[in-house]
Amino acid sequence: MSSDSELCILRAMDKILIHPATELYFGCNVLHKIHELCHGHRMCVIADEAVKHLVQPTLTIPSGEKSKTREMKQKLEDQLFQAGFGRDTVIVAVGGGVTTDLVGFVASTYMRGVPLILVPTTLLAMVDASIGGKNGVDTPFGKNLVGTFYPPKAIVADLDTLKTLPERELANGRAEIFKMKLIWDASIEPEDVLKAMKAKIAVVEKDPKESGLRRILNFGHTIGHAIELVANFEIPHGEAVMIGCAAESWLSQHFGYLKTAIPFPKVHWKFDRKKLHQAMMHDKKKAKGEVRVVCIDRIGHAMEFDGQYCRAVSEQDLEACFAYMEKTYG
Ligand code: GLY
Image (cartoon, rainbow, N blue to C red; front, side, top):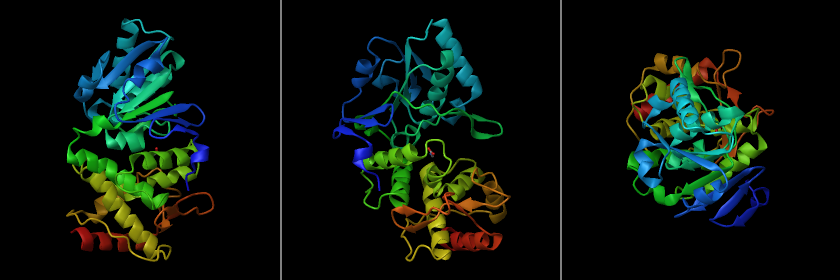
């Protein structure tokens, strides 16, 4: 469904222009592009502590979701002011999704917005967080509740940075790649990082502010996010999303849209129906008190539902889905 004509590929595996303003540099050994892109500007590199050896950071942030706070944003801003960074600054964010979300938010408001370059160093950040201009921080009231849409000037995705990633971390990215296959492009294989990135680029290009189509990126996440919540985030994101994709594929089949079952890896996961149900009520797609899910009618195609790209699930259907999940994972 994604078409290269919409993306203007200049040189395969090297530089891609993401309409209208973001350039994507993708391949091995492409980190040197950062300096070229910042030429003539004052460069401020903010990196996750875990990857500071890849670049020479100006500032570092401690690894982990606990850094994605309003307080950390303010701390970084104060450090930038103290170091005299002005409007001629380009901010470069180097790290996983926590870093790209937090630093992207800083760049979007620092001096009313300075140019931003994202350097995702996890598979998950490459195929998901770095694309689409969303940024933000967590609050005591929920994750990602404060933030902006702020497209970076460039994304520099260097496959070499993935070489030392632990298997569990790679699995988080692979789950998102598999989700893109289910909702958008059946030809995507687990190793097709660039294809998965292009798929997300195509979706957000059509609906940058999530008024409809972009919701399909949420496939597997209505249940996946709820699983993470009830597990207190002790279950890896990729595992939660895979269980969520399996459950929402089952619902798609239960509703009669999907004609054949999709095989999913078997994992063991015990859950409390009531808690899972409660957690699903926090989902952002919820409308009129009802849980809504994205559905697929074949591998590679998410359904439209009059421009809503999701549909309500009755209590009865939800209970049937929980019963399926208990049988499969319990
Ligand atoms: N991760 C979902 C989105 O970017 O819309």
